[in-house]
Image 1: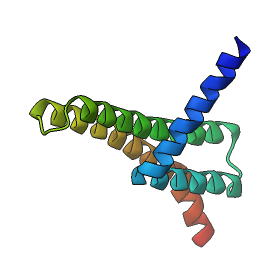
Image 2 (image 1 turned 180 degrees about the vertical axis):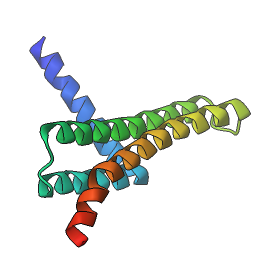
Image 3 (image 1 turned 180 degrees about the horizontal axis):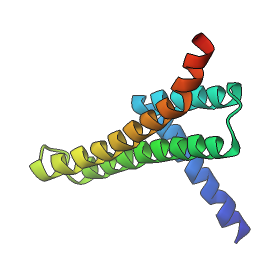
Length: 120
C-alpha cells in the first residue's frame, strides 16, 4: 500500500518533467514563480502575502498543466483539425490565460507599491 502511494509521487514528478521539457509557457511561468518568491522574500511579505503568492503560483502552474493535458488528450483522439477540438483547446488556453492574468494583477497589487516606494 505504501509503495503504491510513493509510486504516485513518481508519476507526478514525471508529469512535471514533461511539462518543463515540452512546454515553453510552463518554463516561463516557473521562472516567473521563482521571481515572485524572491520578491516576496526581499520585501518580507506577511504570512497572508506569502499564502496569496504561493496559491497563485500553484493556480497558474496547475492551469498550464491541465491545459497541456487537455491538448494532448484532444490530439490523441483527433489528430486532424476538428472545429470542436479547436474550441476545446481554445477554452483550455483561455482558462490558463485567466489564471495568469489574475496572478499578474495580484502581483502588481502586492509588488508595485513596494517597488515604487523603493525607487522614490
